[in-house]
Image (cartoon, rainbow, N blue to C red; front, side):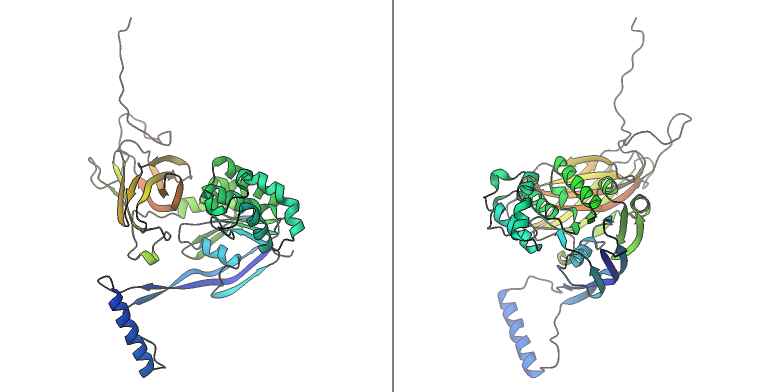
Length: 420
């Protein structure tokens, strides 16, 4: 059988620069450094310029091998930083691999981030034709699908408005509608569907499923394991740039949830350049702190837990609020709690989410942190930023089995007798 995608010994290397300075550089410092560099090149034209910066070679992907058949619906899973988005960018021909070879048979449509392939000054109508042309579609093919695209995206009222005025949800609805309806042989979708509401996500999953049944290949990256398992028959598990496992989605996801998220209660990124995030915010540290009043340093169901996080905020007068989502090891959402919105200036910001004792059940949990701007659009969505295990404790009575329920809160009770 002819394959749709074949990846052989794929690798992608980046050079990360760490500035080695103890104070902020001024314009005078920069000019002096530039003059010294020019002088060095004139005196020693064959010798590279030495500076005080440190560089690090970072392999985002290493020794990746797999083959995908036409019509396969494949989910790609892994923690943040595992290399999922880098892999999709290489498959979409946005970036070139450092080593290895990628062979693709068919036309590729990719949706990797909100607004991919859109021109902000053009209207929604114009961007449909522009995006279709980029995908290799002829004008009459785009016109044939035009009404279906507009109906699916639900943006008819704003069709002639420049897309720079669209919300992030409208952006991604239109972008997905174009990518899905112009009938590519291979459809690549990153986690951008998280921007849409639940109803739209359901529509997207249904469209990708029908595309697979029609013989088209679908690659889907998501942290929503339930959605991924419902859509995909196969899965690829990446960790730290390497492929851990590939096979049936149910088996790979089960192994990932059980073994793929090690206990990680304290993470620190020393430099913004190497930290997860974007041009608006980057994560500096995440820490799970606790102290059991009875059993000392063991985290138990009775322990209050504090999730502490710090991040670099690069925007002035940013109206931000934070959301913490907690999942168990079966990927069931235990709760989603949000802070109130406040205006923050640029600089380092710290937040603490307090989880009371006698609330969580025993088990393994992972933490998802979202930083939201203007109480509407998530600036960043950090999944698996921390994981921790809650131990059971001795309790009254003779039964010590697994406590039923996602949580096991201690509420105030009143009982009365002698009511006759």
